[in-house]
Amino acid sequence: MLKVNDINVYYGSIHAIKGVSFEVKQGEIVTLIGANGAGKSTILKTVSGLLRSKTGSIDFLDKNISTVAPHKIVERGLAHVPEGRRIFLQMSVEENLEMGAYTRGGKGVSEDLAKVYEQFPRLKERRKQTAGTLSGGEQQMLAMGRALMSRPQLLMLDEPSMGLAPILVEQIFEIIKSLHKDGTTILLVEQNAQMALSVADRAYVLETGKITLSGTGEELAQSDEIRKAYLGG
Image (cartoon, rainbow, N blue to C red):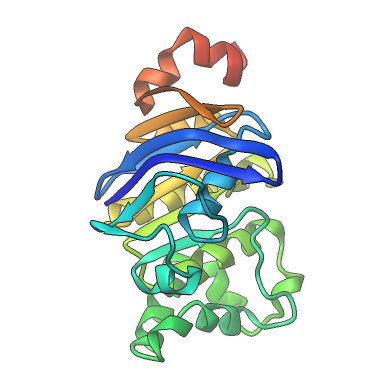
């Protein structure tokens, strides 16, 4: 579904991503794990068209999207939930969700709203509430729900557990598993390596802009190297 081949991304003179290649197959949860500053978010921004690679290619559904505008990438079925949620704080929950469907010209929005409310009952309870008054966990649910309104074939999640209490982290990961079970392919960037590996079919480890290890989620969770570096033992 997604094939990233030899991308190199710079911030000015800083070489942030160095020859990274990986793939996501249909129906998988694939996770990128690594320390802060390793380049995980930069990779997602490059895939979604917010940043550009100097080299290589990014193919989505067998078409090169390396130079495609971000909103056109969304139209093709790839949605990105950014780090920090980035919801519209002054708008209501329902208005935020409706904005997620803007690329679709209003087709089937009410049906998709009903589906999102079924997946996120808390959002239904808060649908008329201003988004800026929601808790951190509710805002994360809203960001995910808004992305789902674009009917993505691939959902990219950037640090969905950031800043959340442990009980909410578990709740968000249950939602991720539920979305996957419903057929959504997911590319997950997550600093909580233990949770990420527990749900991932496959995983890549990123260190200072390079992929240093890859394998199934289970293999990496059992790796002594990974346990010492990311799992606290």
